[in-house]
Image 1 (cartoon, helix red, strand yellow):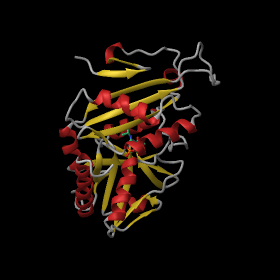
Image 2 (cartoon, rainbow, N blue to C red):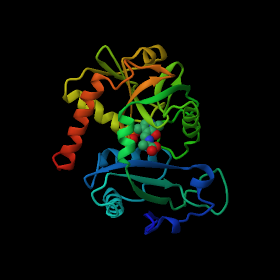
Image 3 (cartoon, rainbow, N blue to C red):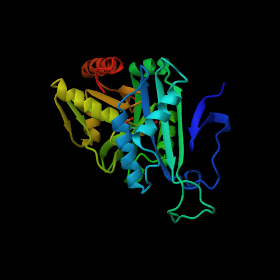
Image 4 (cartoon, rainbow, N blue to C red):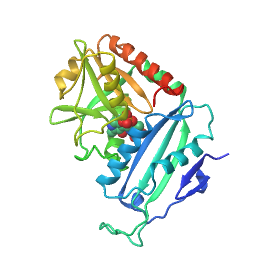
Length: 288
Ligand code: PDD
């Protein structure tokens, strides 16, 4: 049976879901998206993801085509396909299809709304927790990385360069400062202090990143949001890359050199425990 997806008001098999070649998402990558994890049948950090979706839509001047309870309703219907399984839900909105290709925005278009879900792979999660290899690359993306835009060509090519060099992620440097991974946020640990680059136009304000800072706050783990230079990155005791689908990945090799003693670090173990505990509370319905 084919995965059921949601497209413009209908639930239908993925192989029957089609959009127009005149869709501005197809022609101009003119749209935004979200990826939300599902644990224990619940959407993790839903309000934070919806808030970021609203921010992204506002930044590209699209009115949200649905309200929050409508989004929730659609996502719950999709999630019911995989009862009891951890999932990754995908939401995409493009500006919609025009009658011709034109850079100028026609204000009367109806946005295209697409949602889908797929089970999260346990083996992949287990593999990344052992530690991953990352490389550093120049950040050649635009300067609105705070928008979760579907225009990901630069990210895709940066990730491809990482794969070519036997690494899972690329850590991106702009003006000598490490910003984030090609699809993840960056943390380093130096002398017991947790550091993450500050949010702004040059990186995505990650929902996982925010939760880690919240947990650090609650657990009295010392942290700061400040620039991370290349030497700081290279000399860090620990490096982590975080995202909704891959949680907290310890980087054990950076540019083929060991990070710390080439194994997940002490603070990573502590933070992972807090993170998993928080998830367990969430699954039990004790936190939102
Ligand atoms: N990406 N930075 C970038 C560039 C990202 O693409 C992502 C996540 C993050 C982490 O954000 P969050 O913690 O909210 O997932 C940071 C998703 C998972 C993706 O593109 O599939």
